[in-house]
Length: 192
Ligand SMILES: O=C(O)CCC(=O)C(=O)O
Image (cartoon, rainbow, N blue to C red; front, side):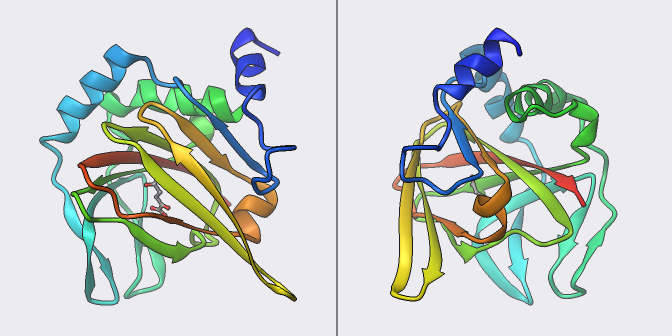
């Protein structure tokens, strides 16, 4: 095990009240690398998130596969571009994966006031690794229990990473609370 993964273990979920299978760590992306990425995000061809014709208030660009909700299938997309490869390597190291195991990336732009509602990611995807940029956000989790919803909440600092695996990925829904300032996220997903 490397020093880097030991560091990430300090932030693992057990004992924190957060869903099993969730891991989180701050400072996964170096400050200069984050600056470079955010500059690159500004010129990406973002499009409004489209859910069955309903346009969400966040904008996305997908690589290595794009989920089409109208057709209910994963469509082809450009491969992950070179500028995202260092971020993919960092996300993979955090998730203890080989970078090449990650074929899909999605960059999301959340304008002030934009968030994302309760959902689980599509079953075509397996593990989910999220990176945050520019502004902090709150990621919320919930799962249905006999007595009602069990809930948890995780602050996402810029340059932090989270991994959704196991029950956090399969059993819990997650959402992002609308923020007051611009935020970007990069979501890397492995395919089933
Ligand atoms: O912005 C994030 O970190 C979460 C993104 C997310 O949940 C999604 O796109 O499915």
